[in-house]
Length: 115
Image (cartoon, rainbow, N blue to C red; front, side, top):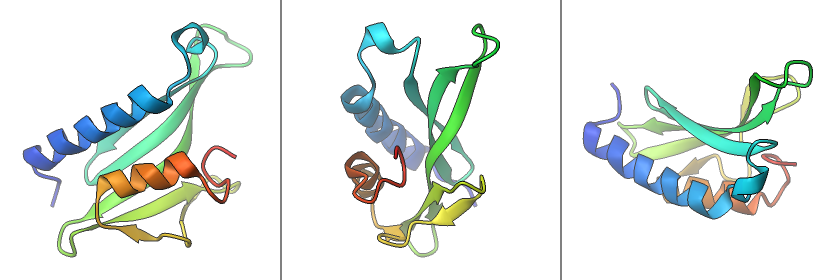
């Protein structure tokens, strides 16, 4: 079952607050930026950079992911490892609010998300 429209709007609002606080300055965004997408029950944060060969195209590198488990009422937290697969973020595998997920990513205490 997908996230409700109300939950999507609330999640988008929190993600926009996160971007406003954490995006690079406007004059650097052509070199590096961050973005998000909501797909099904998951939220994915990614880094955006120009392709190293084709400067006109962009590469999105996944950074963090949270998947909402509606039946339990929590978000599962994941990070992308070197094997390019999502792995549970063991220091905090579950959070109750999207704000908590974004706080974990912002702090990046274990250097898992942005290195």
